[in-house]
Length: 248
Image (tube, rainbow, N blue to C red; front, side):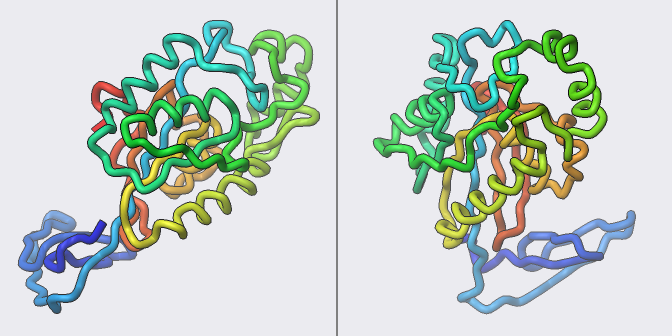
């Protein structure tokens, strides 16, 4: 997307401000006025990322660690993702990327349906591998693996179930994959990434500059839509954990 030449970017104490030439700003309770004449060929390229979590899965009410298990969408999950697709039908997507797990890939297909495009599978976007915990409920993990469970909740950044991935392990594959996707679309436009709760939280923490230790302070409901604008690569989160009814 090409933004008008009348927009400019200004850094104040390291923070970016965007606006139009001749715009009044307020900083530290003191208004000041900026008038910047810009050349007619000046513009900012903006890429908009729609980061989406897959819909509800079969057996979701049991609250089990699904992780890398390939669990399909429930009927309600398919309905919700079809609603997300219709809500975003007016967005002109250049590409839609998805985790290879069927719950994410099917969700991506439903989002892509109004656009007549096929999702591109991106293997590193798969959900965290929970190792020995996969298929177990919260209570079963706590009872069967008390030491692992306590370590995980004290430090999810580096701790992981036996045979599983830590948060840092997941970031090590997700971040380069997302960077590669964004590099393909750095000329502006709209792209969607349909992934998982754990993957999305890592991406959002990175975009917001949040420490990954706080990953679980970010909610990602089934079918959540997050909208992130990248102004010359600088992320601005416009929507967090939106649902189909108010996704835009």
